[in-house]
Length: 115
Length: 114
Image (cartoon, rainbow over the protein chains, first blue to last red):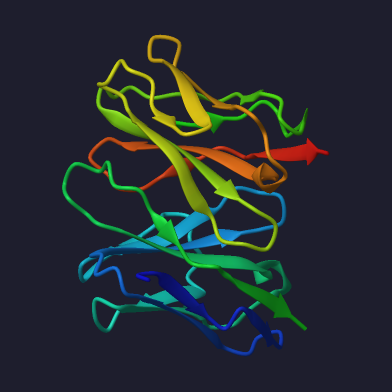
């Protein structure tokens, strides 16, 4: 089945130690998103790629970066994680058609813990 | 800021009964799309139902239906014949304005009692 796959499901890192979360998709969607979701809160969009075009949200900290080497893969890099970055990170994709009516398809998420 | 408001942090329903989750939104656009997503505990978020703002007819997907009131900017979700598997966080979301980005509400936690 076509899907959005996030690895790993659980990630533990040390305070200040860089960490990378990965997302892959078999849907061939041209838009990929990264969200941060803290407990009992709505997902918060960090940034998204429309094809190779990177779109950063104004309030996303500089500590968060992203790479999209090809259509299928997208990475979230946290350069110096702080305790406040502990959260679930969700990757999503959508088929950008220009009509903006396409739903987003989500992965299972990566739960990041900071020691 | 254009927002999505879910005024019910938590709701509960008896199995086989009907429950309605509320959602209101703010937008200055005439063309946009509305979505309800379901996020079960420790599981992925999945689309439940979507509504295109220019369509007056309310969307329906099996036991799930919406009551879309465009003038009132209201988009409620009705779940009929509730099942234990319906227990989850439900998020209302909107996009539009020439953007594929979603604006989410804070969510409603639905409990289904046997």
